[in-house]
Length: 417
Ligand SMILES: *Cc1c(COP(=O)(O)O)cnc(C)c1O
Image (cartoon, rainbow, N blue to C red; front, side, top):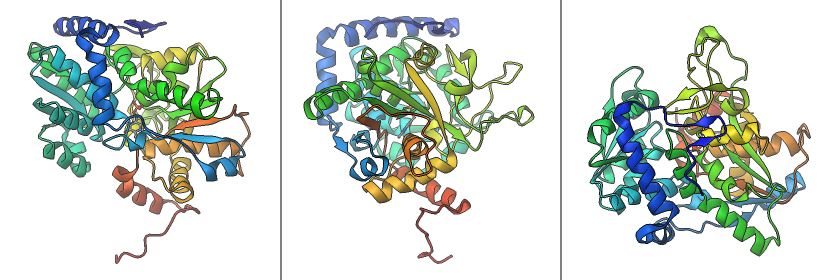
């Protein structure tokens, strides 16, 4: 763990002057409480993520997948963490940090509502008032998550600016923070944003790879050969990789959303994918220099993915750096293959994964499945980080499945039309 503000060329603090006092105060708190365990902060975090969150999460052998691919496949079950995804590690860590800093109020932004939900849960648990900014369009698309946040006592504030999605919600939250920094902490939801957020969010999630390391040594008699995780902003990815970075024998794969195609039509202004690590160019977004989807004029392009959690034009600066150094290998899996993998894991292993997570399994199939391209010789055993469960995605998965003619999907014709 370190207070690095830069990862190679990436990272930094590209924020308006008004936010610098908040960033400086947070950097100091991060160093004291997280890195130096002042007042036993990290001990309390570990106790709470165990008792409230349900850690450690299991490392489970995937029997059908191991047989299908002829390699040993293990699942790191972050879907079993409270809330159904890895996101609570970070949300709980930051809300607790805000308490130690003497803050009285939590704000966050959310797109699909997963980060907002995790933050609302953590704030209720720690008895902190919480306000979540969410684009108007996203609110209407994500009703169940809006109910979850409200039921946990959070205020959900619609953002009507622009297209009413995540990008506008982030700007609105930044504006709030700049004027309320004395009393308020802004909980960023991935390893993105200005320093110290990328390093701090990584440190809260690195409990995932700490456990992978200990569980593998204990149960498999050694470290994994490969670790596979999906990457949107990249927080579950870095969490699954962090404590294994120094072990060069462990191959690390970050699976990005290949969307409907990797070919970009600039006229459209929207990329049909979210593969910023694989195809992006250096630029500045949300306070950090990183790999981004941008057009030939340097304008940020909107992204696309069937999974809302991977649908982001940027990615964490540390991951960008690790891709440049060759330590992390970026790969892409498209919408169709992710959906197929969603059904395969559900039917073969009895685990309905989040659509984000399904991308990681789509990668195994694309390489080692019956029609696999054999492009990679996997080092065994493989650990796949199951970043979240798919309950939140059932409507979307059914709708997207019906648009396609997927061989391995169940039909929903038990319902009256
Ligand atoms: C939010 C989310 C992601 C993507 O976020 P990262 O920061 O890239 O981890 C992936 N999987 C699930 C289940 C999520 O909820």
